[in-house]
Length: 267
Image 1 (tube, helix red, strand yellow):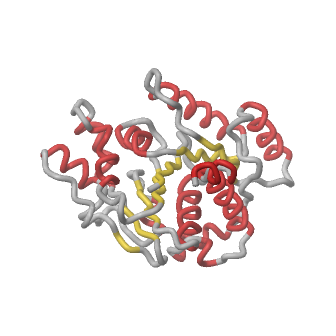
Image 2: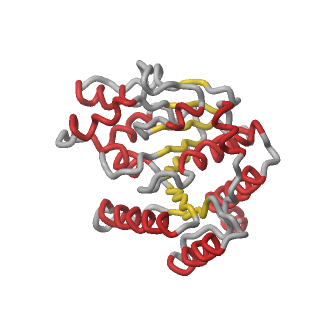
C-alpha cells in the first residue's frame, strides 16, 4: 500500500482538489484507493457528501481509542463514496480539539500509522489531505506517508507558504532519518498573467530538484465538481484540469516503479 500526503501550510492552494482528483484517477485505473481527511475543516469530506458537524464516526475515533487505551477499529470509519474503487475516512470538526486534548500524550504521533496498518490489505493507495497547520494531525500524516505532494499556487504569497512548509519539514525531520520524497506541484497556473509566469519561474529556480515540470491550470469547473459532490474526473473527464492531473499522476507512478533495467535484474 502506497501512502501519499498532500500538504501545505497555506490554505487555498489546491490541496483538497489535488487529493480528490489524484485519488479519483487512481480509482479509475482500478486501484483500490482510500482518501483520508485530516483537516478539521472537512472540505474533502464535504465535497464527497459528508457533514463534518454531523458525523459520529470519523478519524477522530482513532485518537479517542488511543486516549482510552482501546484498539483502533477502522471499520465504522471507512465509508464508500459515489466513485467506484474510492473510499473515504472522513473528518469531523472534533479534530480541532486534539492538540489541546492530546498534546503531551505519548504515542499520539503514530495514531494514523496504526490505523492505516489495519487496512493495508484492502487498499492499494492512500491519499491524505492534511490540515494547513503544524500539530498532531500533520505530524501523524508525515509519520504515515511515503511521499509528499506539495501544491503551491503560482503567486507570491503561496510561495511564502511553501517556505514555511519546507521549514516545518526540516524541523520535524529527525536526525539521521531519510527525508521524505516530495514533489512541488504548481497549481492555479494562468499562462496569460505575468504574475503566474514569474511565480512558476521562481519555484523552478528555488526548488529545481523538487518542482514538477508542468503545472495545474486554472479551471473553474473544479467548483462545479465540488458543488455536484463528485471529482472533476467523473463529472468532466476531458476538462483541462483533469488532463493536467492525469499527467501528474502518470509522472508520480513512473517515480514509484523501478527502471526497466532494474526490473529485469530482479527477475
